Length: 185
Image 1 (cartoon, rainbow, N blue to C red):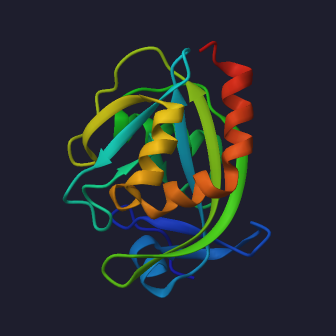
Image 2 (tube, rainbow, N blue to C red; image 1 turned 180 degrees about the vertical axis):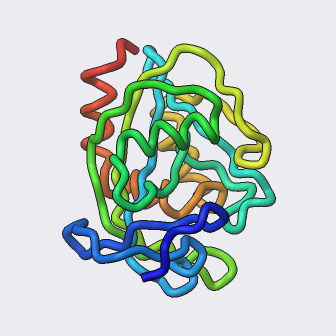
Image 3 (cartoon, rainbow, N blue to C red; image 1 turned 180 degrees about the horizontal axis):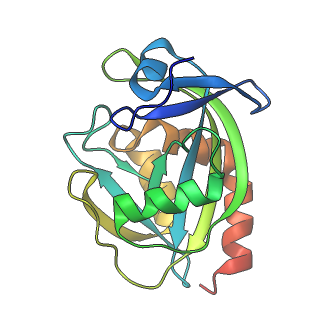
């Protein structure tokens, strides 16, 4: 096995039960459609509005599309929540406590003959304030009422990332329960 290089981003390859099976370079995993671990973060305010980001146009796929607050891949053999919080800081410029609310496995084609074949862990948190996103990661952001997000995704799905649409289709009850239990709105 090739040792990790600081210039290369590695992902944790997993089986269909999320058990580690190895590692791969991130872009190679997406080119070959290898199943790997990922996370998708949804941050809400106390009123239940969700923070969305518009992916920077220069991203290697799905640039210009709206998506959940933050997403990424934990480094191999690193704790999921710690890695999600690290990435939240890198992408959106803030930190907050996160809890895992669901997980799902999907295989979705994305532009450029890439495949998002991920065992995705969905995490939620609460934050009061505005983000300070890295412009290389997110070109815009907005707080949106949860029901409005569901309406917009149904009316214009092409404006949203495929994984956000998949998460909403398959994890909505878990997300709704988390919002009900943690937000006052």
